Image (cartoon, rainbow, N blue to C red; front, side, top):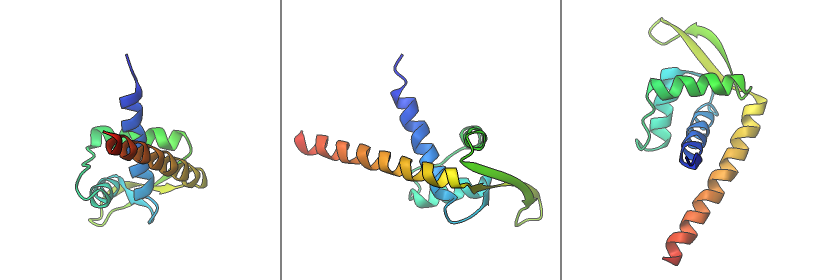
Length: 110
C-alpha cells in the first residue's frame, strides 16, 4: 500500500495547523476556524482529525499547550507554536512550495 497520499495530507494538515498558530495561541476550535479562514473555506478540519494531529505535534515538540478559559468562560486547552514548531513551519512551507511548483510544471507540460 502506498503511503504518499496520507503523508501529503498529514503534511498539509501540519502546515495549516502551524500556520494557524503563527498569529498567536488558540484553542482547538480557534485553530479549526483559523484553518478554514486562511484556506478560504477550502479546508474544514473536524475534531476527529484535528485533535490527534495537535496531540502528535505536541509530542514532537512543535507546539505546547496549557489550560485556560475560552471567550465563553469555558475551560479550554490552548496551543502555541514552539521554536521547533517555527522551524518545522519553515520546512513544511518550503516542501509545499516545491510540491506546488512541481504541480504547476506538470500542468504546463500537459
